[in-house]
Image 1: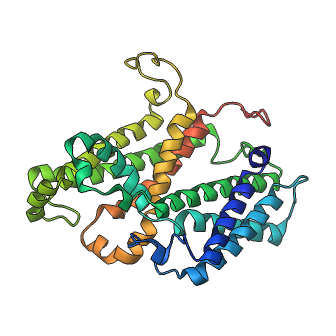
Image 2: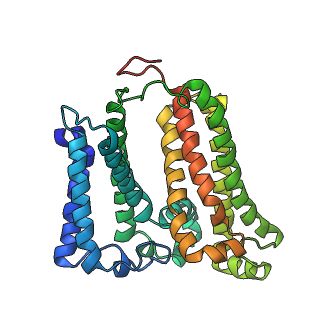
Image 3: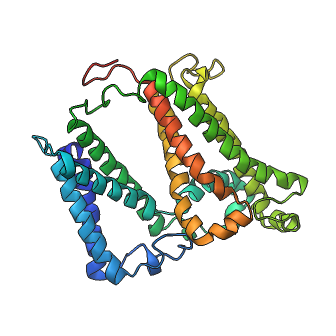
Length: 338
């Protein structure tokens, strides 16, 4: 436990590398390509396990060793080209783990799961096989995102240390001050709140028998018969609620619980209670984009699909969460900077 606490990225990436080595040696369990039966929009849907699995194992092991070196004490203080090369390679690995090795299913599951849970008493599950979604391939995508975030944390800390900045807060910066975060964070919230409302509009239009975003008016009766109509409206309602909660990142009730919340009224909202869900959804929205655009880009543009709004929504939501954190964080426990 102490090793994981001190070097979480190193331990996690090493275990993941061993898992990939198992794929290479046994030829079983490879969660990409032919090993994933629902990979229509996955960037690695054509990956051959005989070639890709050994590559994954070697690359992941190399990244784990690099993470171990970045966590070393005393700190490895590279400068110039060497430092830049490590950072470029490290952040490329982060992008690979979070973006390339995932697809739209993370966002879809996050959006559909609450609707399906609520709809259980009404027989929604009878038209849906959970094993088609909640499988090893999906779990592996979650593991990839966690690996990417742990590596990002290690890189960010090393990046700060090697420029003699505070490892926890990064020190004073032009865009990280409370005043600056308030200014640009407000615009990030506006975009992050507006984009899901576009999706809600696409779904609420069904109430008036209007089809948008690849759905024709003639398709609506069929959607009603198979239950997709109510799921769509539920997703529209969830998007609306999400937009309202996003606005809370710049409103007083986003910092202190409102009076009607019995037992919590007036208490400060924990920063992570707001930032973790916002950042998680933002990441899922962004990583859902590449595969969809590569394999369905032409159709998405022609039909003005809601997926066109995923990139700005994801980026804006992550920035809104960061702005909220920067605006509300108190005195740094490491450097005592306020």
